[in-house]
Length: 167
Image 1 (tube, one colour):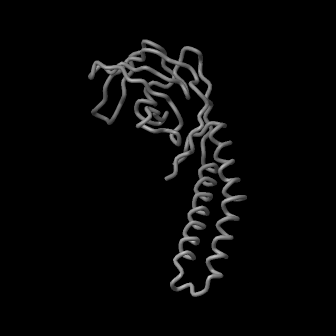
Image 2 (cartoon, rainbow, N blue to C red):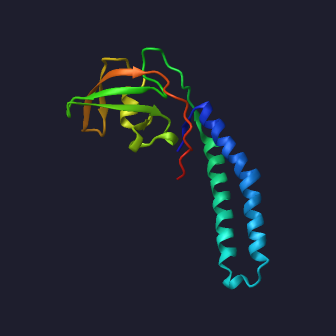
Image 3 (tube, rainbow, N blue to C red):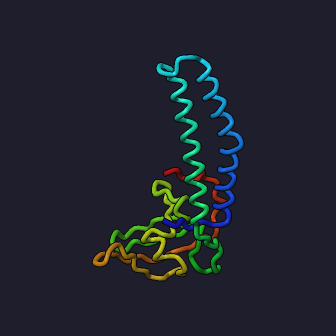
């Protein structure tokens, strides 16, 4: 799957890769060496734990590098009156007769518990590029969906400082 990433996402991922390669990798290798020096490896829990941590770090590095290699770069710019990335949007759900506030983000920053929705989610796809008072259809499946109305757009709310999600 190709992740949609902004230039800022790519920069943060590269920073994490560099940190893991230059700092975490050296610490993990040193921990393995120290545990190995303690003697009998067959009953050395510290050695197995150190190896596991080292392998977990290497796996994360490979995952992030693969993500960067296959990523599709998206712009986080939009017209002043249209919904775009990092915008906070108040949506009126017609079926529930309630308003909900969401922030539109890339998929690696999405967090439904914090009302951060991905531009690849059904709601994200439906509202991206629309304007205040637009009534949009959120398609869930071939036979199901619902309507909502965009009540307000707050442009580019805060710089994203969240850590990139692990999978």
